[in-house]
Image (cartoon, rainbow, N blue to C red):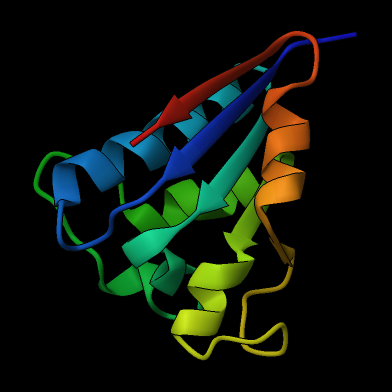
Length: 120
């Protein structure tokens, strides 16, 4: 079984460098052929909505919308259930390809043999 990189991003525009780093690591993982699972939690939950990633800008960083698209194309993106509920985000609101799941699904992913987890 191959290794999976699980990246949990907890910040958004409140910590732009940390946020961009998480998306960059996930996208580079996908580009490198690694199985990647990106989890949007806390303030990064907003990036599950159409147009939100396009509004994020950080000097010397790849556009967040491009990084998110890369992960969606070759990995999985999950929005935290509680984070979505706190922001009144439902399944009908999110970008195609983004699922909503909770702590049990996250735990299953990070406890899988060969999984590597990063939290930003």
